[in-house]
Length: 228
Image 1 (cartoon, rainbow, N blue to C red):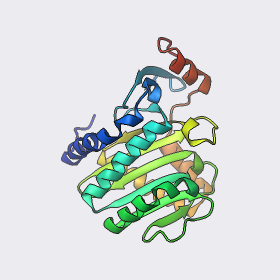
Image 2 (cartoon, rainbow, N blue to C red):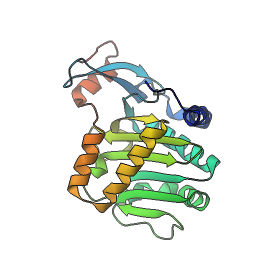
Image 3 (tube, rainbow, N blue to C red):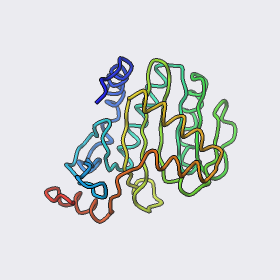
């Protein structure tokens, strides 16, 4: 394992401070479910239920946990004041409640790029909108901040088929590793070209454990059961 850089250590400290105001999102222990790699490449193992996920580990996360981590990364970006922020909203209508916050961030940062599908929001100042109509891209939830002083990313993929935000479940991780953040940023920005081959390359570069929803639901409702 690579030793943590000074940037990574500083961002971890910032993140913990920024997450505190959002602790109310973690009311139930089922907010995140730790996912461990199994001995076989084709198998994964569900682990313990946790209230706040650990960085650099795959977790099953519900909507509230995703929102809390996303807000903490946005607040880091606001505090640093320089850099690039990328965020996906699946559908641009999900962006509208956060319009004012992102307009403010766009005035402070070098670039703010918002991905989504549907009608592009109007009168949003310096925000760059990227249309992501490809169905595979709509599964992802990404909030990424890249600057010289701090780097952070939350990257998840939806694992159920719910269209209701609060019922969606995702598998993913967050990290402050500068090498990982910059790699994800570079590869994700390439997908703005919309080519299917580029999207396929992205999914091969950042694969997620393959889990069945029935095993996830069983683990959440029966914490003593481990699915293999």
